[in-house]
Every structure is written in structure tokens, then in C-alpha cells.
Length: 364
Image (tube, rainbow, N blue to C red; front, side):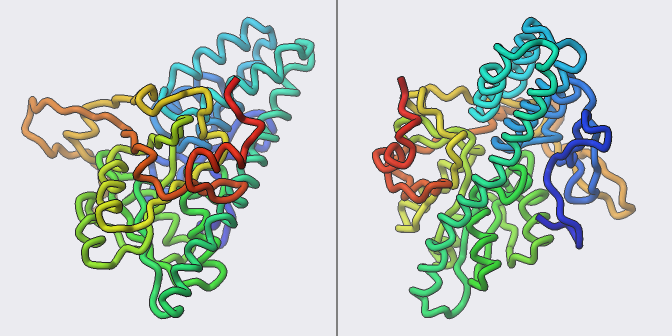
């Protein structure tokens, strides 16, 4: 997608064709900073610190992390050590474990002399697959927005509420839940996106608002607790969110606060859709109750970082000194609150239809 007049992806190979360049998402929206990751540890720390974040992006970044590790030592022992380090970074998004497992399977029987080269090839393939999957997901979901627009006689815009960031910054390009929005907007369908700020890391305010503005999509930032009120006032026609993991029973793990939005949407009769490419579906996990929920630093809740009038960045305290805080990063929305799943192969209303779209993914 575009920033200014230039098309960007969230990551790409450096000019040396070995190191990985990434957009530092902790610097957005106030600065566009490109970081170069030269080692496995660089990649692991970038994932842990959320320099890169978003389930699809984490997965592809981890794949390149394995490739970087094998440059230094292409042994199977190094492959397993790299896999273990990456799996320790963030537990909730299934794409990371999926990508690591896929790389291990692809590389284990490759001769050591070829292992690094094949790792780069396979990571590049996964990168391109992510782009094509998410663009196809956008094409699957855009008709839902168009139907709402036509129902209103093409008069006014379709109000869409989203939570956290599930746009191109969360993947390589296009994104998941926002891909249908981009497709609809580009097709001339009037949309207006209401963006939850998404405390405590404010990915809605800093990332979703940034990328929608760059693409020219009309949007309004709202406080996290304003969504239910706007639903009651008739300003929201559709909720679109992403997923860090969908379990086999159709439960959806996404950024903390998603569950509350789903409850409000259900109470107001508003469709609640999940944009989820197939690598984010965990067919091996029977229940959403089994999804590991990452708990991040309490400081993210008690403090906030922003831009001062002189252009400097500063962290300020929100709570009294010594205040105890909890910071679960995700919650789980039960399948009964989900209207449907938008995937690269179409829209499924429930888990039976979801399995029918991906028959080859059945759990063993």
C-alpha cells in the first residue's frame, strides 16, 4: 500500500539480499523509520518489542529469522535452536508457530550446504502467499460492504467499526479485516471507518488511522468505549476485525476489547465479521478456552507515549505512582457472536462452512 507516493510493504530484503528491512511500527504515526534486522536475535527482539506486529507479519518475519540464523550456522541443531527462540517471543498469534513449523518441515531434509538458500526461498514464498491471500480475502469481503451500500440506495457511506490494526501494517500488504475496506473504497463504494483507539498500545490511533489516511479512506478515531453508543445511534452498519487465532470451534482471539465490541454488536443486531486468512486458523486447537493469552507489561497501561508540541517523543504517567495494573493483550470472542469469517476462499457463516472452504486443513 502507499505512504505518500511510494508503495511500501511492511518488510523486504535489504540491498545485500540477506538482511531484512522492516517498518518500525513503534515509531508510527509520527515518523517512518526503517530498521535493518541482521540476525536471528534482531528478529526475535523486533517481534517481542512490537517493532513488527500483527499475526501474518509476525509469521513471515519469523520465517526470515530462521533464514538469517542459518546464514551463520546451517546445522539442524541451529535450525531447532532458532525455532525455539522465535517460539518464545509471543505466544498468542498462531501464525508464528505455523510459520516456524512450516520452515522446519521444509528444511529438515535439505543438505546443510543448501539449507540457508532454501530458507530464504521459502520465506520469500510465504511472503508472496501472504500478499495474495490477503488480497483475495479483500475480494471476498468487499461484496458484503457493497451490499450494505446498495441497501441504502447508494446514499451516504457504510459505517464500519474496526478494533486494533488489521490493515496492511499487520501483514505484508493489504491486511486482513481492512482488505475488504480497501477493495470497496477503491471500487468507489462510500465507506467511513470508525477506529477504536485500542488501549493500551493504541494501535488503532497510531497505525490504523495512519494507513487509512495514507490511502485516502474516510475515517474517525473514537475512544474504545464509544463504539456501543455509536451502534445505538445507527452510525455503525458493520463490524470488521482481524484475528490472531481462530480455534476449531470458531472462537476468535483478537486484541483485548474485541469481545466487548462483539457483545455490543450482537445486542444491536449489527453484523460482526472476522477477516482471517487460513494460516490464522488453528485447526488443532479444539476450543478458544485453550488459546494462550499474552500478558504484557503493566507499564503499557500506567504510562503512554506521544508527541510533544516541539516534535519530541515523551512517555508520561497516567496513573498514580505505585498503581498496580493488569495488561492481558487479547481476549476470546465465542463463535455465537460471530456473523461470519471472511477468508481468501470466500465467506463462511460458521465452522461447518469454514471447514468446507478448507477441507485439506482438517485436524488429524
